[in-house]
Length: 396
Ligand SMILES: Cc1cc2nc3c(=O)[nH]c(=O)nc-3n(C[C@H](O)[C@H](O)[C@H](O)COP(=O)(O)OP(=O)(O)OC[C@H]3O[C@@H](n4cnc5c(N)ncnc54)[C@H](O)[C@@H]3O)c2cc1C
Image (cartoon, rainbow, N blue to C red; front, side):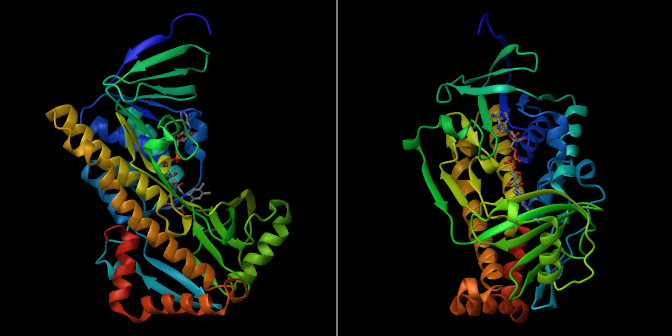
């Protein structure tokens, strides 16, 4: 490369414009702190990525407290009931009832991201899409910097006081931390699943179905959009899941012959891994969301943990920048990790309940009985129901 990079300065460089980065950026703006967000994809790509759909109560409170609730969450209905369909028989769990109305809201991740982007830009935020070759430098110094190339190939350098690594599991932030400075926890088991995104009507309630045909789930992702999960052998061949087989298996496993189909817009075999790094900070770099941890999707916690981390970081940066107090920044990683491990446990618990409790042949009769018993408990014990509902709400 030839020539000097264009130089700029800011207080915080945020790498990645997913839920984590956009929440950090909006909260920093609310707190009057300068930041620049660098995102490698286009705006169009970022606001179309469909993933999660449930905002837990704790995450909802982050936006309400910051005064962004009206702009981000308008029209998002409460989560209401969760249906477990066991061998074709529905059992409805009322999370709202067991949390005194604190169950959270339904909002497709892409809608939340679209609103986070427009809120930040409408308020004059600096968000740079299609930033290529983003690289983080001198993260343990007092003045780290980030370099990147814009869409015209022009090189830039941004000097900052702090860096927020919000670039997901495959991003460039976590790899700048020397491996010996991190403890990495990984877990994968014999659970395999396959996910489908379709232009088909959402279910009445989020639905988890367990039967001898295997596990399947159906979640709404918009007025005419659904995400489905199907149990499959680990590492299953995507090509074996023809559209015809997908709908046939869904109707069988959901015990619903009349399930309306629709165009399938995405299919993937999901890696059901759990992953955590400790600490979630190195020098002046703070890892946020999927950059620091991955939870299995079944607990619906990935997006919510990203928002929880972002909230902790924004408050800590505010104390450091405005009051010169870096105590909260030093506590960033332990504060976040307490919730991360709590949600890891919840996500794995629920994953095991629905997968082992579905297919006795794969799980074995002992694990199948345990899973059915665990599920039964939340319908028979008010204390167990409350504990489960509080974990769903993110308040436990
Ligand atoms: C198929 C699927 C289904 C899911 N379902 C659920 C669910 O039901 N419930 C739930 O809570 N969670 C779910 N999740 C998880 C949830 O979507 C994530 O936990 C959440 O997106 C994490 O947000 P994030 O901002 O940390 O990461 P991301 O949303 O991944 O955002 C990271 C951003 O960084 C950008 N980036 C990456 N590398 C660079 C780079 N080098 N330079 C600049 N920018 C970069 C990316 O383009 C992206 O915009 C699902 C995930 C997937 C994949």
